[in-house]
Amino acid sequence: MHDIIIIGGGIAGLSVGGRLSREANITLLEMEENLGHHTSSRSAAAFIEDYGNKTIRELNRCSKPYLQDKDVNVLSPRGSLFLAKKTEKEAFKRQCIEFAHDEISVDEAKKLVEIVDIKTAKYSAYREDILDIDTDKLLQHFTKIIKKNNHKIHTNSKVSKISFKNDKWLVETDDNSFSSDILVNASGAWVDEVALLAGVRPLGFSPLKRSMARVPAPENVINHKKWPMIHGVDESFYAKPDAGELIVSPSEETISFPHDAWPAEEDLAQGIFNFEELVTFSVKRITSSWAGLRTFAPDRTLVIGHDPENSHFFWLAGQGGYGFQTSAAASELASDMVLGKKSNLAYLKDKVSPKRFF
Image (cartoon, rainbow, N blue to C red; front, side, top):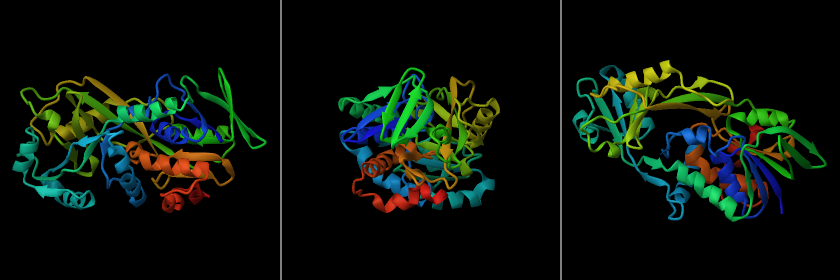
């Protein structure tokens, strides 16, 4: 039986850990006190099957049955509404085609979301089959599988040193050391840093910051919890109901570095301004705000596979903004590859292989 160390306790590490825990001895190391502390806990939590490039969309499609399974059951109806100003007609038409939204009248849009401003919103489009993901439930689902199979999850365990000798890894934290045959790098924004620690060539991942503000829902509106996700053209903003309030994001992608990200006031202000331009609602205060790092490979496609120069090092990285919605398929493929099993997803191996960067 394989001994495997997984570095990273977000959705990538937990999902592959859940898969591997049935057939291997796994140890999962997370540097923070809580699992899913960084980007995984700060996701917009939407399942959009045709979001991303062709390979991402295939991973989305293959993940959906698992996420809908009665024993997992983390998807629920939400819908998606595009709004655009008079000057944004061409971009709006292009976006409708790209994301398979059907154009509707602004009056119909206002029936879906009462605060749509018919004076400024001149174009609108809707798609019903966009879903919410219960991200906390999905994280707990994979965590429970790992624990049920009697494997260890170590939080507060930042990796300080990694060495490789005689086909074995030795991974050290401040308090412990662990050994394994395979090291799975699922460390999110830190994947290149972990690779360097392990003496493996980094692949050039880019952590991109995205911010979010939580604001009170409009007063005297009783149906806001059922509103669809609302998007501006070319990702000028998105907004959606969440926990009885609204969350609004400027949808920015600010080049960053691995750290516990925080939002910039000017980014939040820009996102709220773009949102307010198309609705009759004025945001009076922000109840909370946060930021997360969406980490992409140079070609914005996930990286899943054994490192070409050290087959004992396995990449599960570059989830970008697709981590939750690709997690079921990505973890299945990763687990099959680590265990040397025939995979139903083998046709995607070359598309996600780290070999493409060598």
